Length: 138
Image (tube, rainbow, N blue to C red; front, side, top):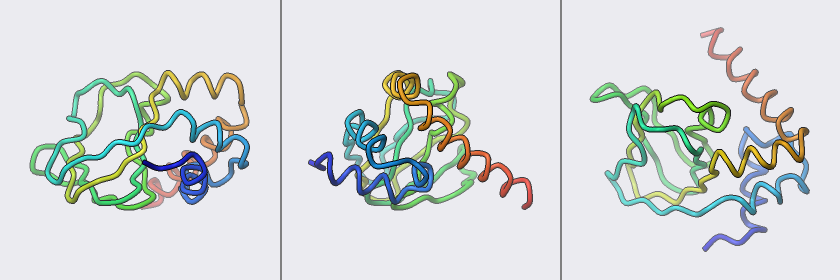
């Protein structure tokens, strides 16, 4: 099991949370749940309800729609992050390429923290905006 201190240190190294202060990261760490996933197991399917985001502590996943693979993600990368901001269905499936250790953040828990600490939302919006600008340049 990953301790809260280890979770805070891990979160600090994830680009989505890089601008967020340690105290706020501690609040986020407390709402994360460790999830272990076997190789080849589906984490979620395209069209599923988007109720959480996931951070990869260890392992690799593929982001895909059927046989079409959009990306492979690894350690310290995030998937499902849009689902903590809206309630839209998943836009792709995620399947484990290796055994995985993930941290899961449920949308409802995250919404509570955002309401209490708007600076967390500001930090995340900066990163998501940067990602969108980078994607538009490609």
